[in-house]
Length: 361
Image (tube, rainbow, N blue to C red; front, side):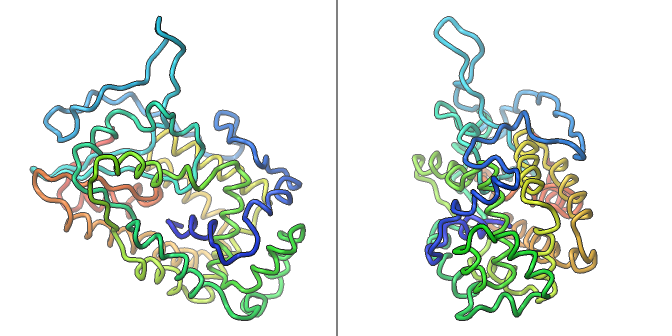
């Protein structure tokens, strides 16, 4: 759901901390407060995803692909094998002398995804070094003030949520949070779209993932040392309207999908997404998400409308903004949620339609 999921997890107006609900998730079978064991993630009923072939060496003619030396190593006389960074979906789009680097991000993560000696693969670090501009979904300035807008548009002055939901859906949500009365009291004051984001945040935390290890935060740690410019591909108002513009039926559909499965099943899905992201294939992530959405949708027509507003409309906006920023011989490094990249309506395909050649690295 974009950067707003991170904001929801950190919202200072909530008197409870999201980790407070971990105990109830643990009781339901989630492995709370433990690192994600990606290799042991439950894959029952999930599509098998082949590991992509090892890419060829990057072309020296592309800016940034004379990358800094890799610190990852095999067995050496100097010491033990160093940890490898997550592969992550990473693509290069070129049209003439215009280059756009695209990294698919996760807004939460595990510290093992970013080894201290080399948090990203060498081609990614090289592309960052070559790019005068880093473009995220939201600029850092917008992200700093976004909590106020989340509160303004997502929280009521009274207990509105029970009145906005059909009684069976409210009952299901209340049962989900019954072990955490403080969380239940606060979620009563949220609009359905924000309640949905909070439920998803809890599932991510229960899976052992943390907001401070989201890709965007780790990228900025690297990029700010280069003193480059960081911009947003959409304004805070535009991102907020993707959610506040949802009809009540669409908001209910979002929340209903989050409650179809048990917390343990949702945690297994979070771990699967994390594993797919580590593999680094954006189209595989999109295919898995489409299959999941098909399974969870209560009303397929309304579910498709939600996807259009939250994903596909924003994809088109992202591409338009990228093309305004990119210029010949001035590459731009774009980092957006991995679910925005793949598929026929994804950013990669939209760039191909604009005449770009897109390659995976």
